[in-house]
Length: 116
Image 1 (tube, rainbow, N blue to C red):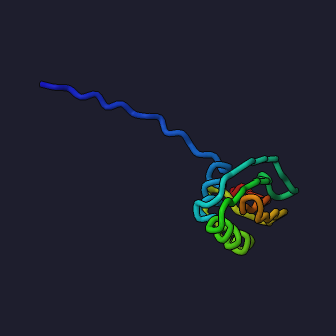
Image 2: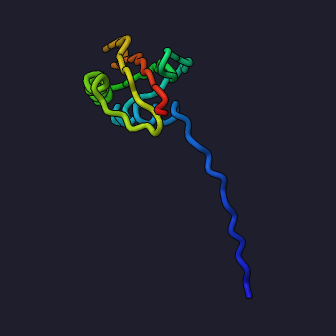
């Protein structure tokens, strides 16, 4: 008789920041490179959460077109991040350059509130 051992692999819980980056990458149609992500705590009298500032770059004509759609869609996008509510999503800066290589750098800021 052969006995098989079942090994359980511990599941690691993905953070809200990781889920936000994934959601932004999807909204950017997989065409953006994440250059940086800064997360800071945020609170008001009634809410707690985090403010996220992300720097992204879209390189090449097809990526730039996806980036332009991303910029247009971000403010009204309905995010699905468990236990989080996107209270605010803004494009803070856009740097669009054609030479020497076409690229567009985008900085966004997202306010996530914890759903209680």
